[in-house]
Image 1 (tube, rainbow, N blue to C red):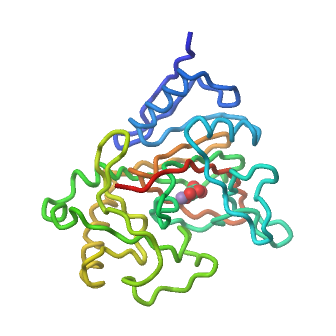
Image 2: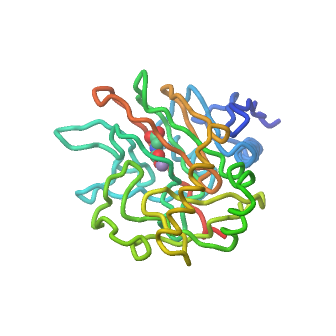
Image 3: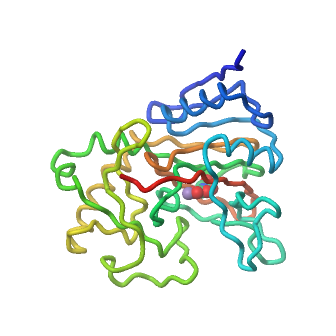
Amino acid sequence: MANFIDIAPLSKRLGAEITNVDLSSELDSETVDEIKKAWKKYIVLLFRSQSLTNQQYVNFSKNLGVLDEAPLDKDGKMMVDGFPELLIVSNIEENGTAVGSLGNLECEWHTDMSYNPKPPMGSCLYAIEVPDEGGNTGFLNMERAYETLPADLKETLAGKRIKHDATHNSAGQMRQGMTKPEDVTKSPGAYHPIIRTHPETGRKSLFLGRRPNAYIESFSSSESEFLLDRIWSHITQSQFIWEHKWRKGDVLLWDNRNAMHRRDPFDNIKRRYMHRTQISGDSPF
Ligand code: OGA
Ligand code: MN
């Protein structure tokens, strides 16, 4: 008999907690199917109180799809030795060098790696050390945000593409080898449909990447800015948002195709250390 999972919604917007699953064990195919079904329905899934080795976390993540490899560090080394799929998200420094990405800074609303032609379908974070306060992560339901968009905006955006800026990361730091864009119509980044269709559910959502240096094709940069400001003031309403307060042992899995996320800053004297896996995706349509 399959070990059926228990699912408890975390908000009306998105998110569900899955209980009755030990992610350190090898999951049978029925359990994996149930998790995938719940992921499709709730967009963000939370598994609490997990205790995983690096190998167990990678094994769990591989149930969800093909994993992307994490970028190498400045010296060309894997962030976690022997585990090319693991990225460290942390503010911890050792001998004056950051052990991971994103520090303790606020991360503005974004979807992961969408400046690439094939952005990851999902991402997963495993909390190994967390501060007692700060560093909460918010999620935004972009299907709801799209459905409730004023009709004239929906019409204006239909069939349009948006450029997802490649120059800065979600913490606002310049990516290696990039310069600050002078002209958003010409700066580097991938174009994607601004209204995308989820390949598994057929549902539509807004696909924005992030606000700074975005550009909607076929408009002047000032027209594009005006439209983007209108869109962003609509989508960032609390009715679309759910926020997660982390505990050690949390595994949080999200869909990058129909959700954005952001992170609060936190006090840099506190330690926050997470491992991230990223599930590869296809070209948005
Ligand atoms: C990420 C990210 C948020 C956080 O890893 O992609 O945005 O809470 N992290 O650290
Ligand atoms: Mn992110």
